[in-house]
Structures are given as C-alpha cells and as structure tokens.
Image 1 (cartoon, rainbow, N blue to C red):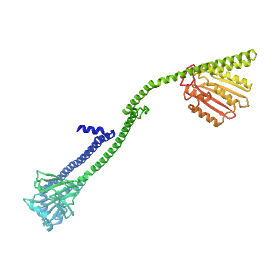
Image 2 (tube, rainbow, N blue to C red; image 1 turned 90 degrees about the vertical axis):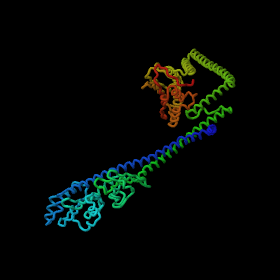
Image 3 (cartoon, rainbow, N blue to C red; image 1 turned 60 degrees about the horizontal axis):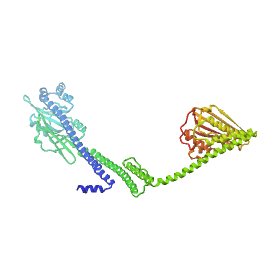
Image 4 (tube, one colour; image 1 turned 135 degrees about the vertical axis):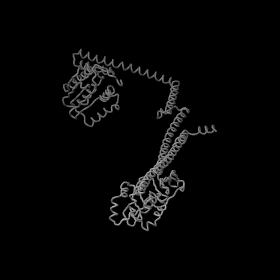
Length: 600
C-alpha cells in the first residue's frame, strides 16, 4: 500500500503536490478549527446566559422574600397591638369622638409612611359605630361573602397570601390576609396588607431576561405573561416546604426555563415562585452572527490563500520547467542558453551552476578546437601592427628634419621671419605628434597656443591681435594636453577668418572656489541661436560624439571622462558680436589627477 502511495505521489506534478498539501494542511485545518471554535463560542454564550439567569432568579427571590417578611412582621405587630384592638372594638356615640381617637393613634398610617414596600393596610371590622377611613373599614355584605375574607376567617390567624383586587385603590396586588383575634375581646377584624406591585414590575423590567413572580401558580408580576393568569411549567409543587425550595430547569423548543419555588416563614399555605425564561434563540443571535461572519472570514482567508498558493505554485512550476527546458537544450548540444533567470532562490542558484558548467564546457571546446586558429590570426594582426608602428615612427622624423632644413636655409638667406615661423610650426607639430594622456603644465599649453597665435598674427598681417590675462601662475597648474589649442583654432576658423573687422582673441585664466576657469573669447561673426542650441545639446550628450574628432566635442568629452561630469565646456555667443568658450576644470596645483579612461 505504501509503495502504491509513493508511486502515485511521485507521478504527480509539483504544482499538483503543492495544491494537495495546501488543502490537507491549510484548508481542512483552518475550517475544522474555525467551525469548532465558533460552535464552542455559541455553547459558552448559552451557558453564561444560564448562569446569569440563575443569579437574577436568586436576586429576585431574595428581594421578594425581604418584602414578604416585612409585611409578615408588620402583621405580627398589628396582631399584638392591644391599643388598636381597643380602638376598633369601642362603641362610639359620635363621629367626633371617633375622629379624635384616630388622630391620637395613627399607627396604621405610620406603617405605610415608614415602609415604602407596602401599598396599603386595611383592617376590616364588625363595628357599625366606627367611622371608615383608608385604614379601618366596616365589613359589608360584599366583603363578608368574598372568598379571601372567608378564607382569612377560616384560617383563624394563620397568614395567607392572595392576589386580590382592592375595591378602594382599584388595582390588583399581592396581599397578606390574616384574621386577628384576642383572648379578651375575641374577633377583632381581618387584616389586609397589600404590597407595591409597581416595584416588582420595575425590578423585573431592569433584568436582561423575562422574569415572572407567581403565587400558587398565579402571575403577580411578569415581563412575559399577563398578570392574574395561571402559569405552571413544573408540577412537583408537593415537594416544596419551608426548609426545601425546589429549583428546576427545563429546556423547551425556543427557551430555557429556570424555576425556583419556595415558602416563607408563617406562610405555609402558599408557594411562591420566581420563573426566569431564557430565550435561547435571542441570546444566540449574536453568536450566530459572529459564527456566520467567522465562516465568511474563514472562506475569504482560504480563498485568498488558495489564490496565493496557486500563484506561487505556478511560478515555481514555471521556473522548474524553464530549468528543464534549458537543460534539455544542453543535452542536445546547444550551449546557447540564457545567462540567468530571475530570482535568488535555490532554483536560480541551480541554474547559475548549470550556466557555469555550460560556460566551462564552451571554454574547454574553445581551448581545444579554436585556440590554435585564433593564435594564428593574432600573429598576423601583431605583424601588421608592428609594420604600422614602424611607419608612424618614420613619418614624424621626416617632417621634423624637413622643417629644420627649411628653417636653416631661410635663416642663412637672411629671412629671419620665415625661419621663426618654421621654428614655431615645428614645435607645434612635434607637440601634437608626441602628445599622450599624461597631464602637463598649464604653461606648456599656453606656450603652444602662443606659438599658434604668433603664426596666425603673421599670416593676417596686423588684422589679428591676441591678449593673455592670467590671474594664476601657469607653472603651478596641471591639465590634460590639447585642451586649449582646438578652442583657439576654432576661434580663428569659425569666428575671425570670415570677419572683415579687426579680430581679437582673449585668453583669461583664473582660479575661483576650487575651479580653474579658462575663458577664450573672440569678436568674430558669432553663432546663430539655433546652431548654438545644437552645439550645447551635443556637448551635454557627449557620449554620442565621434571620439576621433579633435574639435570642441572631443575636448568636452575628454574633460568629462578625465575629471568628471561637473566639468566641461560652456559656449556663449551672439551673432555678429562674438563667441566665448568657458572651460571649467578642477584646480590641480602640482597634483596628478586619476585618469578615468581616455583613448590615446
């Protein structure tokens, strides 16, 4: 079985393997954990709601018990109040006498004043001479025939609680009824103490779940059922006694019921019940929303991660396919493969090693099969170069010797001017032919252009003059050779030769803030704006110029390549006024610059 699985896995493409691993490890795991935690959260919410409901039930029970005991204690005090008994048993001859007694002993009114949980206290008496008020009432036939009155007389002093209608306040309330008797006076009356039902309603309304207070199955106050109706979810009321309360919980279709039935002291005829109804669907609504959101979020995360894994698996598969394709080319004898592939991962490293191996194979082939032919070609080229070098060495000597012969004959013939011109021309030619890329002094450059200007002055016979304005010592500064002579030559050729006015060339040199500035000005024909823009554009794009040229473009290129991009030529010109060429160089006083790469 294991071999079959291994064979099946090994036959799958890498991309398929990655997707299977994703679904097994990521998708299944995330979905399982997500569903588990959302389900557990819903169960925790329900359980916490049950705990809260039990706590609320205990609070309501405690509050109700305190109020019932207060009413019971008040009934005990009235039961033992002999002064009150005497007042209600006395036969009065006038209303004034009765009113005076009420005013002197307002005990029942004081109970209501001090105990806010009590709604009213009424003592129903069989004394026709007594005056009715809000607390002491004569018994009439309606009261005498009522169920609660008969029950109170039958219980003979035992406290009983009923949910009854009060004919004076016109409202239903939970009331204590008790027959009051005396050994001396016999039957005194029937006491009714009613509780403030509105307070129970307020307490219930403040609870998070619907709560119902019942007495013997009759609703006294409720946030869910109608008051006075009968509700009975649980039927084991016989087990309730003073010492044992019955707490039961039942689960219905849409709610969870928590019931707490109990009795209080001196009220053994009644069963009180606090009923809490927990709406399960309502309390789980939030958890269901969260669960739906969690499922949506999990689905979104799984989808995004699926897109990511598909993308990366495709990238990985494509890179492996590319590596396989290039290796297949090598196997077929084609060594022209890509130099590298994108990335820096292991596949890129593997491809790099492949390329290195292929390159080594190519080099080995070149050494074995091509090297001998290349060596023969190299020998031929070397011989040709040696021949040209020999010729280039003969020509300068021939020119120097010829010029020197002309100069000596002119001198012997008394033509000193011609001899001087030939001598200066020879210096210029020797300098141009022997020049290299080694830096020279500024003075040697000025000497060369001085010779050139003197020859031109003799040619034009007083039509050209020149002037040097030096603010530096040229012996102290080093520059590249042949930077100034091409500019001066351009001034003659393009500026002064076609001009009819007296020509003048000025060479100004000064050192300013670490820059050596050379300005070569002429008062020739100038340059049109269009042509000037073209020339300056060529100077900015110096890499496009012909490196064999010895004009201003070549000078500009040599400066930038030798000194850096911030140096070079700048041309200013006005048509029919003249032209100024500014050469910006670094101030190199007695220093040797680093050559950046100049063609000899």
